[in-house]
Image (cartoon, rainbow, N blue to C red; front, side):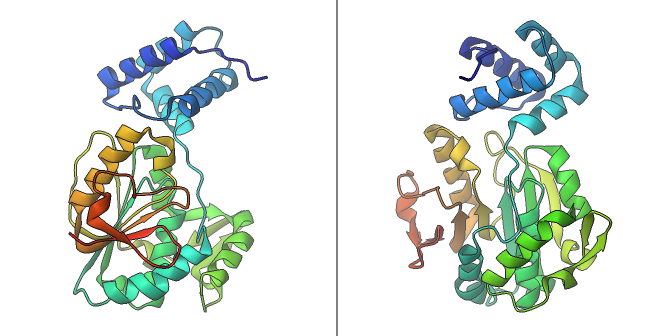
Length: 274
């Protein structure tokens, strides 16, 4: 049985502190999941009371960064759900190829494995030279890893299998240089990636895109926050642009859902039709 060290009322107090001091709003995140992650952190960092945790979060900016890194979910991989990437290769990129310039937003991109996957797709379609990939996340620590373009070498076997299943034709290891236990990806893949912090809860649209990718982020949001994010995406997509979500996410019941049509490929890819 899981022990509860921080109760719901204390979670509310902590979230209010964070909004007022740092401007990060987690109040509409799915509460049960958020509470579990805060309690996990409470145990890992060996706090003896809620008051001690609260004091540390309020007074130590470095610890606050650690806190954000731990309570936000940063699970990702390259070419995750290969059939999704196959659909991008075969159905979305040929449409994007007709544009003189391509802007793609990876919202909630975590450490950037999917951003580099997209860069590889674009390079193989000879589109990378005329593309800009905006990679954003609420957590500045994970973005540092994205900027470096370095991922664990131990993951490359799985990533290579994903890549081949997605329709990749090259030798996957040709995209990185192995050094001890790390794989550093070709700097040419990262040259068109713009990295920035962005909060889906409070920040506004910052450009107009042909494709927005936000996968496995919204499953941690309550419905009002999901609807807010969908509204932001709708405002940020040009007409006939594409929105790609995770396998367990759905635009159908959103207030803006009627403005989109899902592609006929069983993947969670929608096209803006209004």
